[in-house]
Length: 225
Image 1 (cartoon, rainbow, N blue to C red):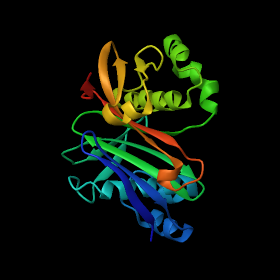
Image 2: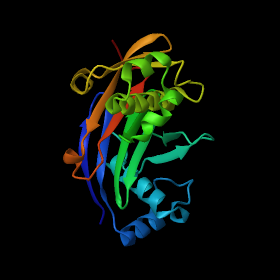
Image 3: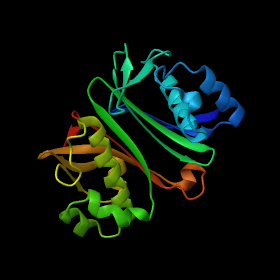
């Protein structure tokens, strides 16, 4: 059986984070019999991708407001939705290291986006691709700010669609980790100030080596600052 557990849950936004492992044998059995993703031949995916789908399936089972057999469908851009549910909008994200995985699922009655990202040094190298000049000057090499900003922008990208430009349409006002946990991070989205839900998970909290990461969730209905 999968050794999965809920490590974080939020009611506003509605979001659940799951962590765990699954043996190759159990993973193979699940992928051969799963009904969560009927339009995907999950059993033909790599073990890595099968594991990601499996943990998302488990996470969806943890939402009491969803039917246990809710189906995930994908549009032409790979954006997921829930079929026949009161909360049809869903966003998923995952982070996998070896046989261990973290899955994040957010649901809503309006478009919503969530993302998880490891605090990788490579974010310093690609920062100019997703940060504007003001953010680059303010954040410097602060890896917390860089990682949190990436997840925020990716979350709003998933909620708003492919027309969103990371550098022009979303601007993050970083303060510190504690404020990010307490009240979220102030974000300018299409010239409107939003308060984006954010959390940092440390390697010590998760019990994994070298896996500090950030999670963000945003939508059209994110709290105005």
